[in-house]
Image (cartoon, rainbow, N blue to C red; front, side, top):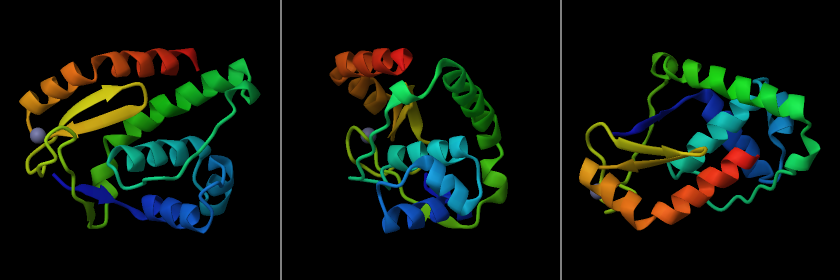
Length: 148
Ligand SMILES: [Zn+2]
């Protein structure tokens, strides 16, 4: 199943192509959407494999506790918004490849979510095999994500 990109995704990509080290906040100001939206979209673009090779380092020690909570809330509400994502897409599509076998994902992808990561598979078998193969790494990433 292809992924739809909208203008917000494109604006983020364009902005990052100018300077891949730009902060989410800087992008947020530039394209006039909230920072958590930028972050969420960025994660998604990475998850579907469109963004590759931009290294971003965030110093979480600079985020205070209340900031972190706000961040979490914003991400939650962003997740809800995502349900409506398909209502305002504009026909740009990203083709998905199965993260296990590398084959095309034709139908609805089988999704594996952990931490802020999503992996997409052509079938439940591939998803299960991936889980089995990368189980310990997945657990490690989950732990790291919890501790943020
Ligand atoms: Zn597969």
